[in-house]
Length: 124
Picture 1 (tube, one colour):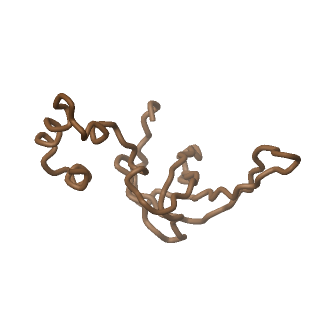
Picture 2 (tube, rainbow, N blue to C red):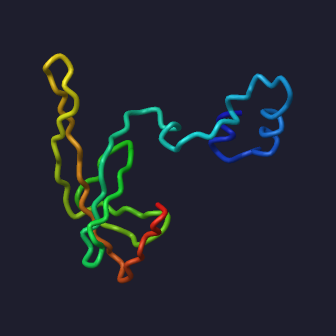
Picture 3 (cartoon, helix red, strand yellow):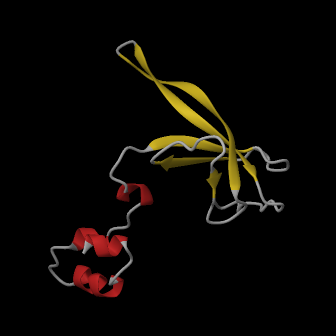
């Protein structure tokens, strides 16, 4: 049933089973984030729009891999973007027993490749 849900098949039938009184499948009714369906490692990264007029707006994402320079990213809404470079930022976190942990955060630099820049919603 979980595989069918992930593939968007038989949703109504599975929903009825999950919602039934005393169902042993209640866990299938919980809302899942997209990254919870990925079984490999996830990388935290920040996307930076370097398009002229893009205001360098950043979006933080989890993804299975860091894109490479030249790759194309297609968002659900907005302009198709090309990766024009990747910078890395070293961030110190915590200070457990006198030792701080350092994390490497990729900053993926993007530029719109179509002629129209689409302003993102403020709610996102």
